Image (cartoon, rainbow, N blue to C red):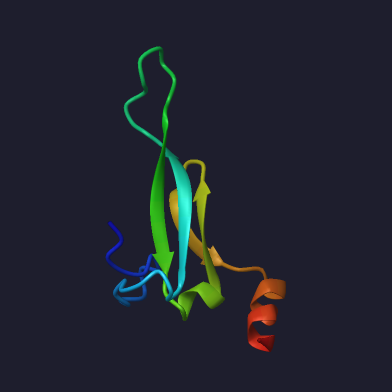
Length: 81
């Protein structure tokens, strides 16, 4: 269940799907499934209205799920709207 913004520096509580943006990321499950294959499980992350304008959620091998800045071109598009 989503409780708050995925940005660790933000404490905005999740209230509605209309506010912010939800990300679905497939995460490798531990331990490996039968046969040695790792299954992938969908996990849900939410960024509030303010954070989703400058940040996104990514999965990086060896680092896990992270919140990182959006490219400057995307951030500029938000500023124009």
